[in-house]
Length: 56
Image 1 (cartoon, rainbow, N blue to C red):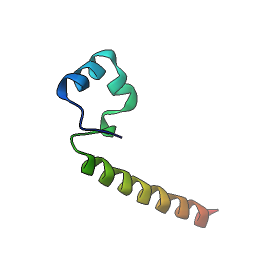
Image 2: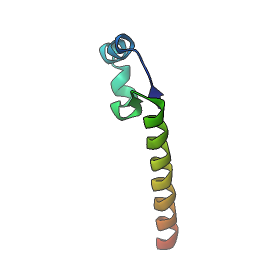
Image 3: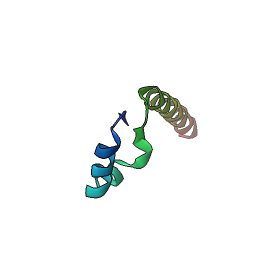
Image 4: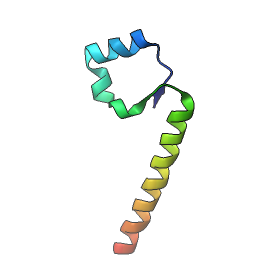
């Protein structure tokens, strides 16, 4: 998760391709957005793991 980058830094990452390597979905304007995304992802991963255990 990357949050709060100044626009010129984000532009540099886009220009050199690192932004796309990391994935645009991992960049956030504010820390709160990054934390919310992370918590939702953890919950989904936990649910997916429980589901796969049940199917085994």
